[in-house]
Image (cartoon, rainbow, N blue to C red; front, side, top):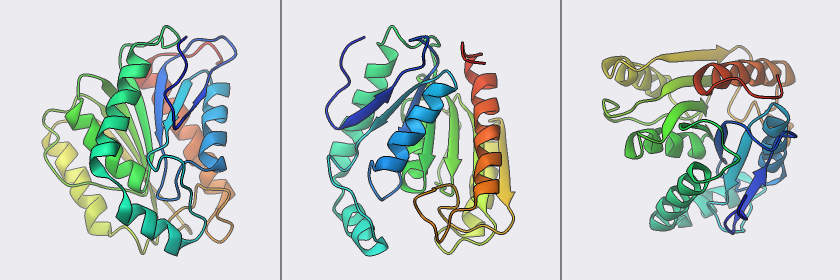
Length: 220
């Protein structure tokens, strides 16, 4: 297959072919955790591709992440997302016509928007602790949401609002809330927030959902 665009990370399954997934990082940037997640998803049989929406910059602290998020160029992000979709859709390694998108916090917001803006390309969306308001009637995707029990960054009203919007659009959606968790509970490089049991359960649910939505992988 063609080389991946700059500022990105690509992981292929052992078979060399599988359903295509976009992995959209949280406000930390495309760090080692999200690259490792692509590798794990490739191990499950998916073609996992993560665009670097900060174009090489990575934050470690919340303060640095906030500054990177504030400086994020929306036009560049739109271009990078469109390029990522076009790359996967045009790849011979991708076995299913519709793509899956997994987004974390900031990435979840972008994944939800992408499912409407490029509805014909997106067949499945997984969001971790991130929401977005709006009209989803043009979307064609199924949705899976993973949310924390206590989250200072995401209001419960936002989660309820997203569920209501998806119901109004007649989109299939399943949301889970994980007891004893907070924001970033899935991310192993955030030791203050990481909850391994919840993360493992969310991972299992994600793979099952994506296989149902995008077709079985060769690695099952």
